[in-house]
Length: 107
Image 1 (cartoon, rainbow, N blue to C red):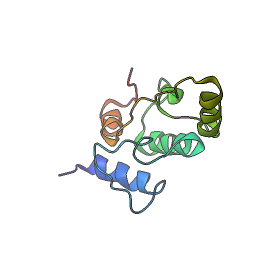
Image 2 (tube, rainbow, N blue to C red):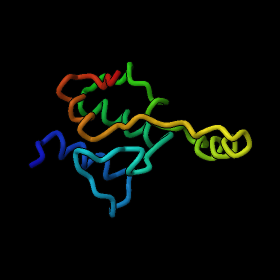
Image 3 (cartoon, helix red, strand yellow):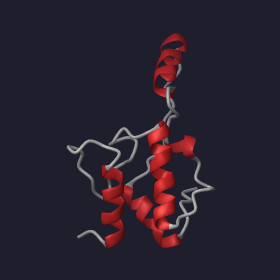
Image 4 (cartoon, rainbow, N blue to C red):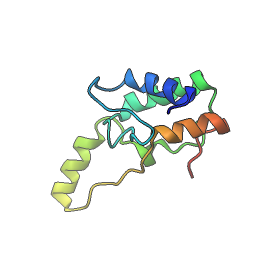
C-alpha cells in the first residue's frame, strides 16, 4: 500500500512520462521512465516546491544526462571506443525519503 506522499509523487511524475509507464516505489526516473535533461530538472524543481524539499546538494549530473548528452555521448563513445557514462539510479522511494527528511541528499 502506498502512503500519501508516494501517491502525490507518482501523480507529479505521471505528468512527465507515458501513461503506459508503470509507476511504483522502485521505478527509476531516468532508467525506467527515460526522464532526463530539462524534463528531469523541471520535475525536481516542481517536487522541491510542492513538497518543500531542499535539492541544492543533489548532484543532478550524477543521475541524469543533460539535453543532447545522449546523442553526443553515443557519438563520442563510437569514435573513441570509450564506455558510455553510467548514471546513478533515482527511484520514487528516494523522492519519498526526501520529503521525510526535507532534503534530497543521496550522497
